[in-house]
Amino acid sequence: MIDNLEMRQLEILDVRLPSLDNEQKRKLYRLQSGVKGENLFLEMVQKYGHPNWKIYSDYWFSYGKRLQADFIVITDNRWLVVEVKHYDGLFEYIDNECYLSGNLLNDNYLATMDLRIRHIRHMAHEINTGIKVEGLFVLINENSEVHVQHPFDFDIKLKNELKRYFTALKNSDIKPITQNYAQQIQNVLNKYSAGTPFLPKAISDSVWQELKRGITCGQCGSFGVNAKYRSLVCSICNATESKEQALIRMINELRLLYYGAEDMITGGRLYEYCDKKITSRTAYRILEFYNKGKYKNK
Ligand SMILES: [Zn+2]
Image 1: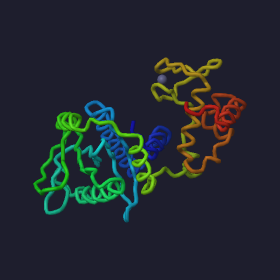
Image 2 (image 1 turned 60 degrees about the vertical axis):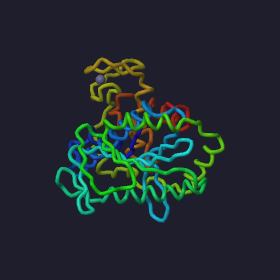
Image 3 (image 1 turned 30 degrees about the vertical axis):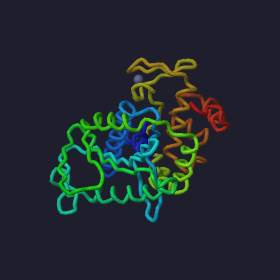
Image 4 (image 1 turned 90 degrees about the vertical axis):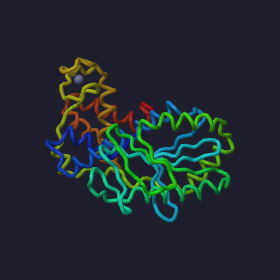
């Protein structure tokens, strides 16, 4: 599953603020659309690709310039550098510019694609110059159309072409990746890894003041939960969740809201965030367990 922390923070704010501003709304929509497209691609490659392949996602690297690859699909002798766009409309390339439904896009995505492939090719060739490094630009939205006449050194595919594409690749790239090669891949990816520059920022005090308090339902997301001994029961969808589980979700929400400033998350803040639906003793106790690592992997 592809995830995005900025998106998850905005989703929490969208639930708890009276209204996101227009810039935040556009950003949330853009991130959700991108993540949806990437998950669609991942499903296709998992369904039609070979289980021997390795799939790396959202890889940020610095090779002279900081760039990102949505995916690198690695087979025994091929690295497929993939960019996924979830555009709804006609994607065109005219006079070295990209257009979507007639509107000029602010970036030349196809030129960037070229650069991305070339840099990753240099990296792969540090392992072995025989590795084929190829590019795949995917327009994954059902409503995508494409019109590109310029000859590029990579494939441009629509969603309905991926099944055939991966089925063909599955028949040719069948050999398993050796443990030694897997280690070499990991080493070179680590060597050039740059980390994502897009991480959420901790909310300000004024945003905190504005946030709607309360425990949301883990099932339907509403604020209609009522405490019942050790459980919370949703009055909207009837879902039941243990208080402990719900509090872990609330701590995880606070961790996204205070990303990079986790020391702001105190028992008192958790108690207030939950609108005092639990006792402050429970809030402090669960947070303490959480911080001691009791709930890792949950
Ligand atoms: Zn519910």
